[in-house]
Length: 284
Ligand code: PDD
Image (cartoon, rainbow, N blue to C red):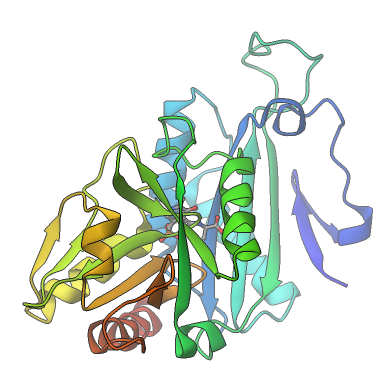
């Protein structure tokens, strides 16, 4: 059984309790982060901590714990669960209070929950085979840059892709791809240029995205951050996605159209290899 963290305590998962009045439960009034663990170490912890602070700030949500305290909690969870490879999920909500659209008083303590999930990240069947994507209209709210726990639409989109025989959904707003249901989206053009949506309130500013684009630039690959259409993606020579849970994951099909050769492409494979090597070195 897992040991999880709830508001200052490390406890067995079946003893963990959250109030039914928690605003995360009633209003999806909470934010989260997912950090990957390789060889028992945290990948890009500073990046995830920085984005957590930004999400909290955008929602005027306070969290007592410092970055060092959060690091310590992450490390204790890794140790107590003997986690070698997988993910750590962290969620902060505005705490528990009588149900009201008005925020509770500022001194209402935030709820802080963390748990681990064992997952094979490096040896991934999906990355080896390549993903089949279906596009779905992006019907999320317009603050996708805040990593909130209101994930119903991405979940519905992914289920729609699954029901059509795909692995995941890419979301399309005004005819342009924003991102995947839980990852950032990329295409590679004939001349090798990597294209990914520019940062705005319409996408999550991926921590993996930032690191992978840096790897690409260090490898002298050309990167352009701009919107692209589904049609342009279908004509690309390669496509892939990035996230903390999937690293760099090739895409081989979009809406039934084969991308490039229909096999994971060399750019995605190279970036996956280099990203994993860099993160192994830098993990703390
Ligand atoms: N999802 N875009 C969306 C909508 C996401 O939910 C995620 C992450 C990303 C990639 O961000 P990062 O590289 O920082 O993981 C992009 C996480 C993994 C999840 O919800 O499980």
